[in-house]
Length: 231
Image (cartoon, rainbow, N blue to C red; front, side):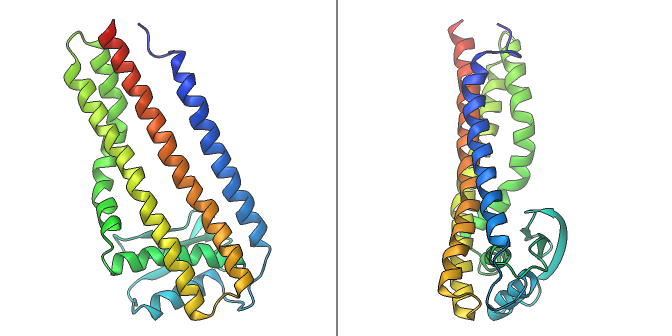
């Protein structure tokens, strides 16, 4: 059986593509909409992030600009919170929400939030495993007695799926911390809080989509292995 052009792949790939596309379009649309709405406080994303960090006793995390659109992230290795174009120096509702969310990750790191610690610990293994998984599965399918390779490939990709699942509570918790911090600091008004929740909710859907895509890909790999064993 020739697996490179397996028609069954489309059964899994098309839904995965659509789920990912819809989630990305949604977050970009919501972010664009609320990027045009200015906050009453007038604070920029960078200022909001710093205020949240300082109010939580965190003074050793740098807030830096990073190029790109929605490339915002917190790097626990170097204790750097990076905010993208449209967030760093913007005082929009969307910018404030995203900046607060990333500050939420820094708070998680500072308070040793277990799910973040577990996700961070898994990063090296998942980075290697996700790249090796399919080659190992393919080698196992091509060899007469290649079960050890296919099983190892499935195991490695399963770890990648677990990683996406662990990411969900990390992201949801960071958004919850963001909303609470913004309210405590008085940075947003009640109607702005609703808008921030919409921005963070749309962003959360991209992680739900990532889980769905990873599971579909794993199911495809499992179907390959099962069909090989049935032949």
